[in-house]
Amino acid sequence: MTKQLTTALLLILLITPCLTNAQKKELSQARSIIKSGNDYGRAEELMKGLLKDSTNKDNEKIYLLWFEAVRGQYNQANERLYLKQNQDTAAFFNLNRRMFTILETLDSIDMRPDKKGRVDIEYRQKHAEILNVYRPNLFNAGTFHLRKGEYQTAYEYFEQYIDCDNQPLFTGRDYLHKDNKMKEAAYWATYAAYKMNDAVLTLRHRHMALNDSAKANFTLQYIAEARRWLNDKELYVKALEEGFNRYPTFSYFFPRLIDAYSQEGELEKALQVTDKAIEACDTCSLYYFAKSTILLRLGRYQDCIDVCKRLLSFCPELAEVYFNAGTSYINLALELNERKDKKKIRQLYQEALPYMEQYRRLAPKELEKWGSPLYRIYFNLNMGKQFDEIDRLLKQ
Image (cartoon, rainbow, N blue to C red; front, side, top):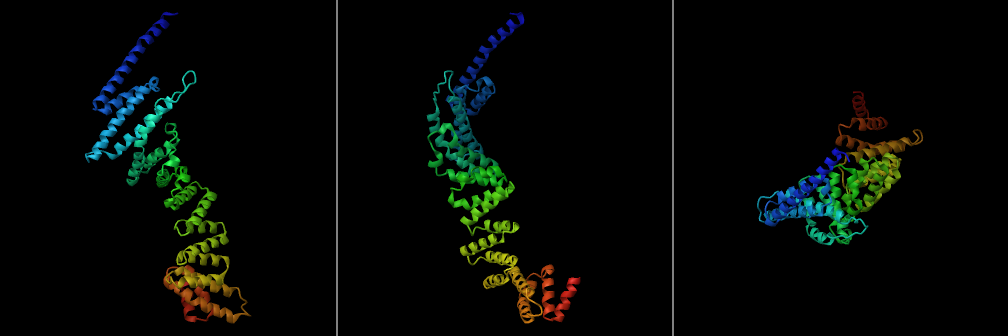
């Protein structure tokens, strides 16, 4: 063995006991601090310092003392809140969160097999019972940050609350089926992700969130929006369909589903949607107007007129309904033979006249829409004065 190698080995042998002594000293110091009930923060920093050394990362004693140091700070903060003394609520919730992170990490170490492949889990049951008491504050922290508009932080707390069900530490607790707040936590996590415009996180807990029946309509809205952000048109439409079928009067789904079908030229499907919507609420003007517009596009002009008349009987101020009715009368006239059906054509233009003139009164700036129809009506009814005015406006 060379002289240099011998020297190196000697240094290692000398340093190792020093490191062990230093570790023992800091562990002892942390224990004394925790026992005294003072300066828990200092005890935590000592343990975090030890964990910076990779050789300590599996040392269970360090994690146990770290947990006690954080729990001491938590209890002190909790007392200050109870006594309405000065205490940062966000910092209090963060202490609660750290306790979970520490013991979940320790559990992963505790469950590792020894050199002979044996697993002896020492702390799980005790630590699960301890954390189960603190777990509701993960939910409370989420709602706290949600109210403050801190959606990222709120999401992280709700995620941690939900994730307890996946942690080996809580094996047997079955939070998914036994904790009634799980579905609500999933909803608020979905909402927070939606507010962040994060499509992936919005969809992560969607199935559990839909179990919160009181807010399932909003959950379906968030799901649809997430699909749209991902440019997944097929799943976007499916989400709209599910939302509309379950909640036909909810304001979000109807117009977007009609628009989606219309863009694809699926007007018959769009018409079925309007019929179902009207069946759910026969006094909603939007549903009747949408139906009249679809019927107009389908060329079912008399049906369009009938729907417009029904709508105007209880909602006479909607300008576009007059336009749809007037246009339908004009289109019916254009379908007839000019020589054989002169009388009928004139009658149809007379029917169209009050509707298109009323549309002009209600939407005076829409010259491009009412100009040409009124030009045709006045021409066919020989209304010279009115025809000259429209002719002049169109030329301008």
